[in-house]
Image (cartoon, rainbow, N blue to C red):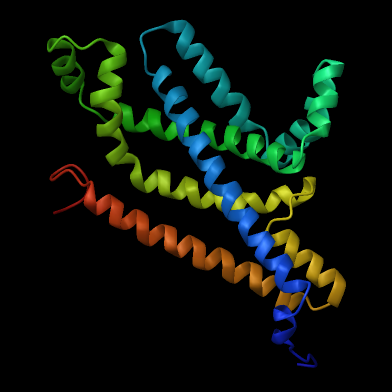
Length: 237
């Protein structure tokens, strides 16, 4: 191989600063988007399982729209089209905000992933025996209370593996946000490669970052799954 590796250059300025900034932005974006996506996903997934035809229609429409449009296209729509649809005053205020690319990426990632999580929530709720609902209603709980105190906590334990997978997906999907100017870890690797022409070292940093982070998430979620396990419900004891 006619290639002279230089790993130490990654510790020099400005490359080390680019890596730190990229890693920080990736983690912040992924965690914030995950919290929003999980909240919206639980809401949408729950209303899809209610008795109201109108609510089910709203939930189904949301899932089908956001799940079936590629994330990259959604990011472009939020970044380039959404501001144009705002009234002039709001559009100017939006454009004056600091970190518009980050906010746009947060919106796009959150709503896209929420549609996927909603399907996981619906699947988890569907796996709950009808007797659980009947028992909750027999104690005097209404539909909202039944979902809040009985159904969602019960279903969440069933869905932990699927939800873990969705978090890993949102973390890796954050790489697409470089297309709208977010300086995450893949963007940092791209900047380093274009400045030094050392693609192996630059993209190795990004790859190792993703591998370490995803492995950490898998370990944590495996522990959480075991901690919240309901005997006889999830896997073999």
